[in-house]
Length: 70
Image (cartoon, rainbow, N blue to C red; front, side):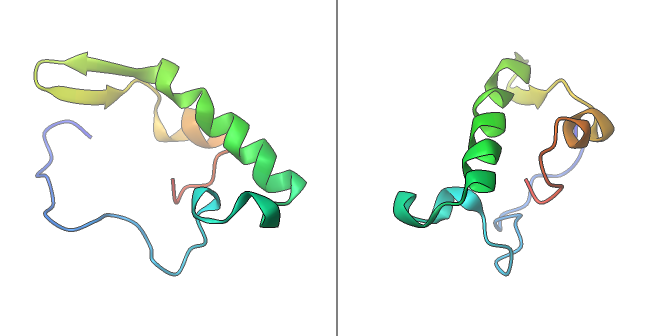
């Protein structure tokens, strides 16, 4: 979000089980699908000035099938 203050603390819900934090041996087929979706997000990143910006809107991001927590 451009123009917003950068927080000094991590911005994620520690109660949410992020798929990339689980060992490979415990991942479900759904986890593996989500990981594949997350791998393509780098194509939507661009540098503007001194910031890295995601070129998708929140609605577009969610439409890809990635949970809001990401």
